[in-house]
Structures are given as C-alpha cells and as structure tokens.
Amino acid sequence: MTELALSLDLKDRRCLVVGGGEAAVSAARSLLAAGALVSVIAERASADMLGVADSDRVQLHKRGFNIADLGGIWLAIAASEDATIDRQVADAAEQRQIICEALGATGSCRRPPAIQRGEVGIAITGGAPASESGRVDLVGAGPGDPGLLTLDAVAALNQADLILHDRLVPEAILDLANPAAERQYVGKARSKHSYEQGTLNELLGEHARSGQRVVRLKGGDPFVFGRGGEEVASLMQEGVPVRVIPGVTAASGCATYAGIPLTHRDHAHSVHFLTAHRQDGAVVLDWGSVANPWQTLAIYMGLDGLEQVCEGLIQAGRDADTPAAVVERGTLPSQRVADGTLTTLPERVREADLASPAMLIVGGVVGLRDQLANACGRNDAAEG
Image (cartoon, rainbow, N blue to C red; front, side, top):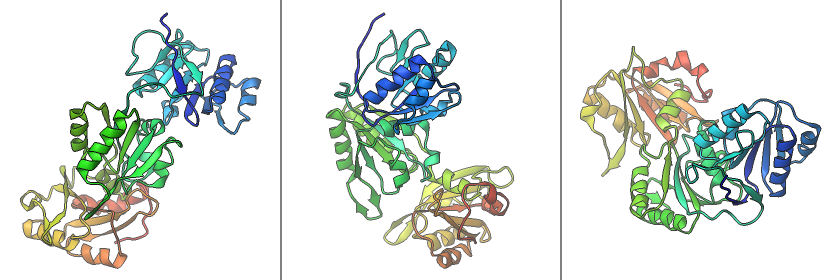
C-alpha cells in the first residue's frame, strides 16, 4: 500500500461520516478536533455516537445513506462497517469529486481527479490547507430557488476560497457556500457593469494562479446568455484549470414555476431562446425566425421593450391572440406572473407593475397555465 498523508484544513468545512459504530465515532471525533462541521448518517448509532452528536457542530441523521447527503460536503468518511455500503459511498463521492476515506471498502481513499489509483491514507489536521494549484469553477446558480442547484454546484460553493457572483444570485444561495470564503460582487445590470468582461477574465485568472479555488457564480446557466464560453476560453488560453457546472436556465425555471411547459405536442414542437436587446431605442430581434405558431419563444430581457416586442411579433406573423406571459422573479417566493395575449399583455403588465428580472414567454403553451399552475412551483400574486 502506498500512503500519502494529506494535511487538510477542515475548519468550518462540512464533512460527512457514514456509520454509527466505533470507527465512525473515531472519525467524527477527529473531524470535530479539526474544527469541521460534521453530518453523521447512521441507521443505528452507538451510545458513544449519541454522545458525539450532543455537539452543536454535529448533525445526526438516523437513516441509510443517500447520494444527496454528499451535497455541499468537502470530505466524506465511509465507516459503516459494511463493505458494500462503504463502497457505495466511495463510488458516489468519486462521481462528485469529493475526497472520501472508505474504511470498509478495502481501506481505499478516493480523491479524484488528482488521485485516481493507489490506496491513500489521510491525515486529518486543523492546520494549513493542502497544497494544490488554484482553479476556477463556473457554476450555474439557476434562476433563484436554492433547491434547483445541482449537487456539484453546492459542493463547489462549499470548497471555494473566493466567490465572484452576479447581482441576481440571492443570499439564500450564497449562504450555502463555505463560511470562510470571500465574496465579491461582479454583476452586470443594463448599462451599468461593476467589471468589464475583459477585466473580470483577468481577475479570475489572477486569483486562480495565486492558488485559490475560485467560484464564478452566475445566475441561470453559464452557457445560456451568460458569457461563460468567453470566460472558459480566456482561462484555458492562460492555462488555468477550469470546470463548468451547468445550472437551470431562467427560461426553464421560470416557465415551470409559472405552470407553462415549454413544449407540448398539441401546442409547441420547439422552443426558441432569444434576448430582446435595444439598439438606438428599438428592440432588435431576428423577426424572420419567430413567426412559427408551433414554436414557443422564451425571451430574456424582454420586459423593457415589451410593447415593441409584442407589436413586432404580430407584424412578423404571429396571431394577435397568441397567449403570452411575463414571469417576474421566477422561482423565488416573490414570483409574480401576468398573462394575456400579444395584444393585451403590455397593459396587463403595467397594471401589475411588474419589474425586472423577468422572462417573457410567448406561445400556445401559455394557455395551459390555468390547468397546470397549481402543480408547479409558486402560487402567483399577480394573475392575468
């Protein structure tokens, strides 16, 4: 067995112990001594484990292991005294790129992707962080509801030293991050950018080269109107390790929580994502591509020029009675929806006094809201 001792700084990091016996108790005590926050999963917990669980830094869950238990975890120890369970934990941790010491699985340790072969012992300490090169994770925060984050997104947030976040990322998502991580706002609003894109690219590379684990946290999905491709290309050109973790894009999240399926065999055979930018005061769209009545249009940033968009769609060939809706702050508790037709929607939105951020959805699928809304996401304060 080839051994490698890793010095890990676990202070205030979330760690997982699976098991309730002697080995699990020893692991939990070691993690507590290192300053970690410990979750214990055990169907049967010994008296000693119940004593450990009296600490306010320990959460004990009396049940079997589930892959969702790895969400936000920085280090996992599988000590169930059942080799099958410990192997299950180790395999799930490997898929999530989480360090795992699997005591019942032939004593192996998983630390992908840097260590994938050999058996490695971990020395748990409360000292200096492990020596490793920095990296950047481009993480999709989704449209706002923390429940829509992927497990990989939560894990990246928990491992971060620095989080550079957009303006639409709510505090409820930032609160899932490593408490010791530095947060920096780098968001963009219309005609008001805290950082130009080139400067932001340089900032990401600079912090990663200094050895920091940087999370670039973006609303929605990094590769859907998020300039993620530009940031990845810039970092790769500089030789900076970078990974993209997709998120639920606003079109999908907002539509679903409003009770609107983006496609439906009776109403829409395709969906078109587009943005409604203004140029010299006029909305710029590819009007020739939007006339198909069997196509749902999901229009980002469509609120400011809503009246022009609706008029333009009618002139481009969409029926004036085509159902349409605006979803404000989609997926959040404050979500509101106004719906109508291309003719009536602008007035409905003015009456409801909706504001950005908002998603415009056009197509026959909007007409299904009355049937589906109660089963999807939030109840709406504003109705068309």
